[in-house]
Length: 417
Image 1 (cartoon, helix red, strand yellow):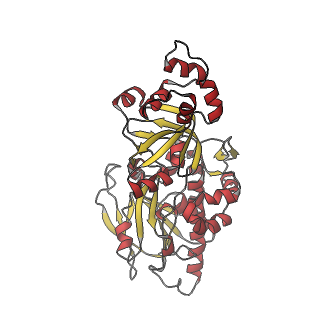
Image 2: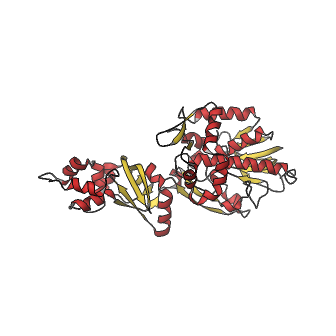
Image 3: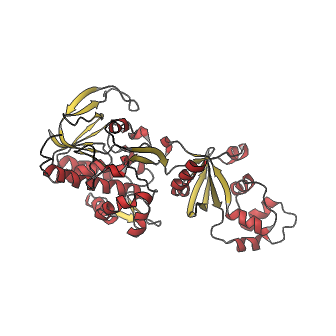
């Protein structure tokens, strides 16, 4: 019998395993995939963004409605502590120009290898191709083992196994990137115990719009650089990419929660694109008031404002291009794009929804399932990209480890679950 079974070998689960094993608890970590932390590795492909260096008050506000729940957890395990942990594993960190924090190697794999070596030295047992399919409160936990010969993208039937543990931590992820392991197959298992699960929705995602055939055929895949996007009173500067389906990219992701909720409420959302955020309306209008001569509108705009062909196409996509300088300047500062729906959750960086936060006690234990804890992206919180996602996963894993240790030390925890 193990002290703790952890289902899910992502950052939240592995960090809880580290904390618990350091305190002498026997821990087994299972994961349905052939290797651990696949989404963590995917996040590191473009440079592993661990956390962010901004002021903690601003940092915590990024979690929107989940801030009251996550704030005390992140205050206990703040960004500087995560950086020290990373450096203790031999991976020094640095702060990029945007304030984001990265390992100097810019990769996830060296950090993960060092982390797994530490867990192995602590006696943590890792079982891949194992999926938790049932939790029985009056007997051993039930596991289904995947068929070792099954293809990586199939479940395989496997064989039922029984494993006994005094406590269980669920860190099986949300519903985005299911090919990497987080397919939300655990939802019925908890709902049948009365645990409230809020509907999963895509987060940090692109959005669909009805581009003209010309725009799709000519400009799909074209980046929009040094722009600003606005919706619902929130403004974000950055970049985006025009795709055949719509828009995606960092600036779009930063507004994805607001855009998604507007679409949920009204059926569509209007995003405004500022093509020249560094200049005001008056400055643009003054430049547009210069004599045009025999130049075409496109040539004039290219020379005066350096508008690119894709920016010109966006202006035309929004309707007739105004002829008077001030109206044209205002249009350039706020090109409207009507968005119809978010991209599929399969393509989203993360997901909103999951276990309702009021289903958990302060130690991250499910109130309706004593001895069963949950952390990471299974919980109903969301955050923008920029290091906020990983920071919260580590912080919830740390709090869950504390809660599990307290449970095991209590008289109730002395009884097997």
